[in-house]
Image (cartoon, rainbow, N blue to C red):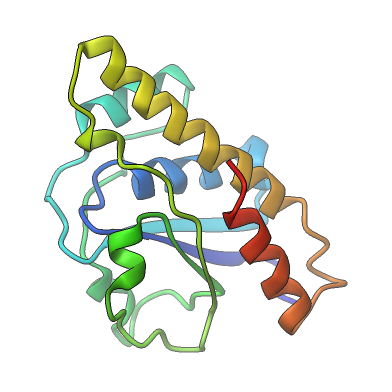
Length: 166
């Protein structure tokens, strides 16, 4: 398999969950340079949620390059070749996705939308923390898979199983 895998995290708005997953996957401690992550949305909001940025900064993750963008950027001829595409929200998983060149492996890793939580500031921050920790747990499990030994359906089985973990 490849020396470095390109991973795309999809959501509807690309303002919170997919952005946090992109940042976590690109963090050196998680992937060790084995992955390059991206994120996008089917209907991007055009901004990164302030609570997502706050949480990522507290984790000492770089945030200056993060932006809300359309998934169409990744279906164009000059887009990075994608090895894996993960939907992190139920709405995006139900939508008709663009055709990804190279037929990457896909899985649904749904996480409740922290941006949709109403309540106190602390309740909203807790929703972002909860989503972040579910995503990072899944990403860490994914990063530890023995990619040199897994192929096809066996790898797909692992991806689907990881998506079912909370």
